[in-house]
Length: 501
View (cartoon, rainbow, N blue to C red):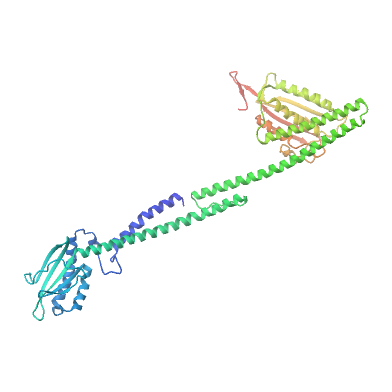
């Protein structure tokens, strides 16, 4: 149940239940106080006139008094009989006074003093009369019945109905009603508090326990939502938070593992050229390289190994920038043919020194341009070619190593293909070669080195250029790398437009 609905129901209950119960107490109760013999009907409660109240109650009590004195005149001086009669009419806010001759024989008004004058004997109509008094602003109705005692004494019995007794009873009644309403309100509040507490607090407490588990690092236990209210939404939000924290935790562990693996790879890859540099340098110092040609070869090897180390360090530096998405790009307008011909010329010289045949072909029309970062794109080509050279395998004069680069226009993109005749990549390793730190057993092993981040850098740079990259390979025959770059298009009005948009 929604919290808004729950609070709305509570509000209505607080309003309606006390009103209904109070109505029942006021208009449905036949007896306001269980420990008193005072009865008030609903009609009497609706009457505001005190005169009318005493008149009504006097009319109810008078037949009882008249009937009693008609059959019990001989008992008019019996106090016990008079007390019994007085008790019968007290429910009607009345009491009796009995007078014999001029002396008061019985006064049923309790401790209250009589504040009105009793009329004299006789002068009544058919032995009865009714008088009204306003003693101290409290209306009083007096009904008189004259009779004769058995000893021939004159007697009068008076039925006294006073507003003072009505007010006293009414005040007590109002107090009882107020206390009853207060009890109803308290009970209603207690029931509502228990209902709302049971529906809200245990679930919040459970959610607090789940939050404690998350705080302590326990992220594997799912948080199961309960109910269909705002607290349920909070459960769902906590579950989403738990999932994200769990994913981030796993990502952090994976990154830490990758960093450990990277450090291990870098240590190995640095150790190999350092060992070679040290060995060749010692050879030069010890005079092993006795001829100028041999010394030059030793020094050239040292330079090559130092260049390998420098390339490895640059690669590591770029990797950290990739990891934080801070690669420094400098995009500019590039002529496709001019750019790739310059790259091919530089690659041809380097590969020639390594006894590797290099072929370049471009079918792109002159004047076709693209927007790219020349330095980063050069890094892509260098990493792919270096990877091909590294895993070229053993070649001889009859079967030399060979790398072919082909550039062609494929609509709104430029496709670059770099193909080698090296060792190739197995089918099971091929889908993973662009993953960070992945080293295939057959092609990225400890003998050839490789940090395992070169091709991941290539993929990142190509994608940041708005392009795509993929590869095909046959084990033992060679590998072909393909990557696409968006070219600069001319719209029909002659304005330049970037096809990457």
